[in-house]
Amino acid sequence: MNGDVEIAIDARGITKVYGKNTVVDNFDIRVPKGAIYGFLGPNGSGKTTTIRILCGLLTPDAGEGTCVGHDIRTEPDKIKAQVGYMTQKFSLYQDLTIRENLDFVARMFGVKKRRKRVSDALESLGLADRSHQLAGNLSGGWKQRLALASCLIHDPKLLLLDEPTAGVDPKARRDFWDEIRRLSKQGVTVLVSTHYMDEAVQCDNIAYIAYGKKLIDGPSASIAKQVGLTTYRIEGKHLSDLEERIKGLPGVAQVARFGTGIHVSGIDAATLGQTVKQIATDENRKWSMQPEGLEEAFIYLMTGSDDPIEAGE
Image 1 (cartoon, helix red, strand yellow):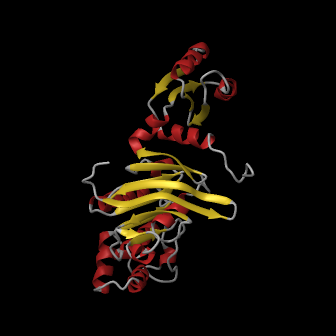
Image 2 (spheres, rainbow, N blue to C red; image 1 turned 90 degrees about the vertical axis):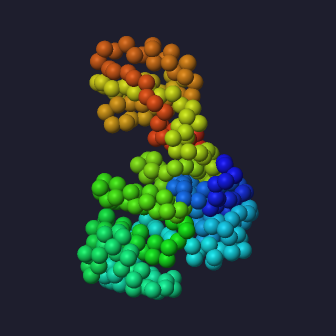
Image 3 (cartoon, rainbow, N blue to C red; image 1 turned 180 degrees about the vertical axis):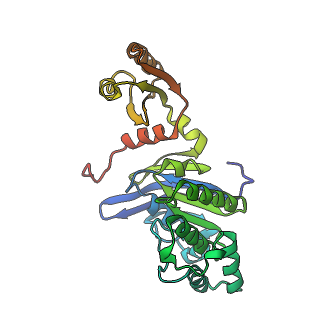
C-alpha cells in the first residue's frame, strides 16, 4: 500500500475468545482513510465482532492496533466518539418524530449548534418534509435514512454499517449507497458487515472472514481472480438432473444454481475444461465461459471453511 495514503485503521494479531471458541483469530488489516471496506462472510463468522473491536466497542484478548488515530486498547472512548454505528435493526425511538430522534442523538453527543445541525441533517438526507412524522410510521427505506442521519449527526470519521440495506427496496438501496459514496469522497471511512453480494460489490475492498479467520482480502474487483476459479454457465432443459450428474466430476469444485442457469466452477481450469467438453454435447443446452465472479468465489470459500464449533474443536 502506498506510504502516502493516510491509514484510518491499522491492526495486527487481533484475537477474541469466548470460552473455548475463538471468535476472531489473529486478524490483521489496514484500511485507508475514506475507503469503503466490506467484511464478507457467513452468519456467525466473526465479522461484527471484528468490526466492534476495531471501533473500540470491544477489547481484544490479543493483538494491537489503531483506529482513527487512537489505540484500540487504551483509547476506546476516543475512538467511539468518532464512530457512527448503524445496526441492522432499526434502533431509534418509534414514538418520537424524525426531528425529535435526531435532536436526542445530537444531545447525547454534545453536538454544538445542535438545532442547526439537526436541520442540516434533515435537509442533507431529504428528511425535512417528513421531520414531524413519527419514526414508527416510516417505511423501511425512510427508517434507513433516519438511521443514517442519526449516525452522522456528530460528524464521525468512521461509519460502521451492519447489513445496512437488509429489508429495503432496490431504489432505497441505490439511494443509500449513493450517499455512502458521497461520504467516502469527503474522507469518511466506512466499514460494512454483510453476507449479501449486492452490498459487498459496493465496497472498494473486501475481507472475507470464515469462523474467525481472514481467508482473503483485497480490492473487490480482484477477489475472484485471487481465488482462482474458472466458471462455466449452463442454460437449457433438465438442469436439475445435470446438476447432480456434474457434481464430483474431475475439475468440478462446485455447482451452484444462478437464476435460469447453473454455474460450474473449479480451480483446475484445464481439467474442468476437459470435463465440460465431454458433457457439453446436448444441443438443448447452452454453455459459456463466465468472467470471474464474486458470488462464486464467496460460495467456494464458504464451502471450504469448517465451523470449529460444529466440528467440536
